[in-house]
Length: 73
Image (cartoon, helix red, strand yellow):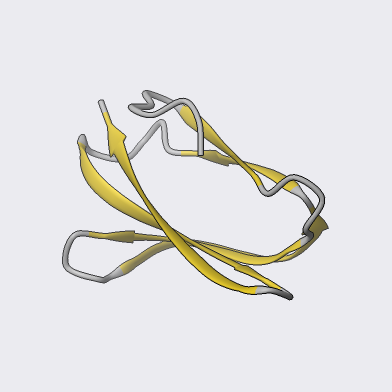
């Protein structure tokens, strides 16, 4: 997940593993953004209109789920 901290967009790159779904949740666990059927190893997420704070990126692939913290400036 880069850049981190991010101001307007961030990119998730899983190397060669295809992303099935990506979710951005806030510190309370509320889903803010959901991208489905990505079928690519990289996805860019626009967070320009979101308030500053700490968020979690949930990445779902055929190999499982990964969660990364991201800071929005």
